[in-house]
Length: 396
Figure 1: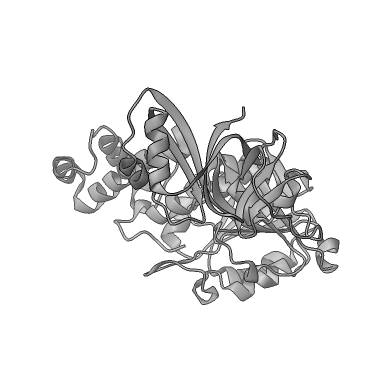
Figure 2: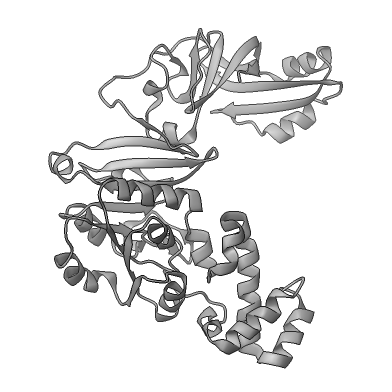
């Protein structure tokens, strides 16, 4: 991860920086010109800018880290790339449960994810290329060993000295001037280095974005998509069972948090049948869809369309992996039909869900001219019989 382009937050780690942070934290709007003017008069332009920027980042970080944000040193990239605390805690707990006692974090950035390893009682060695970012990591990781240098150059020595209770964690930076990239040439540490780690003798976890292309998944590893409160937030490449990996047996899985709830794809189960909707529709969690584990939600479910991730059954399904809806009525998806249905049923509040149809739910709601005391939910989906609108009721 690269250093932030703003005035270096590493400047804030001394006594004068602490005073500047105290002053900046007292500002109602740290991004205002008046706040900048007040702090510049006391601390000079560089330290004032760094303190105000850090205060602004910490306030933004409260949405992700809660009260803990006030104790963490951030960069803009570090905040954006940090896992949600519940996800990082799940990852650390999984490593600990596998017998891991020490983690080598190659490319730790500000150390936001490594904090969870420490909280789980694991020993941490963190490697960061940028010296200024490494200084923040050292402040964020009390008790950890933070090394400054290129992960690919430090790895041989660190890995050679590691025992079987050591795991490797790496979160390759994928940010370029054009935004996030899935071109392996843009990864840092380099993708060949990551593949070498996955083929090595130690347990490994590689954190990646949820849009992970399946062609990047090496044979013999577990690809695990993680959902947090319904949002698919990351994918991970895991290798905890070295013997299974060497046998080439890979796994595709979904993990839902809070929980955790885990579902592994049944890769040899064949394709689900496809037919018209039954009495219930199932809307799978996005992590289950990406893991291709639809065939594990309910053994009697089928698809409405071979390429659309809505399932149907003739019975209600209680599962953490999918929301269940009872079908009350099936309509043609044309706007004229929907407008008449809205009018006849006096619908004033309408939730619209859709997949595989070129529909903007917000724009459609406006065109349907909602009016009346009733609420309803519509699911618009492509089916074997064409586009359909299902009037549904969520099953608790």
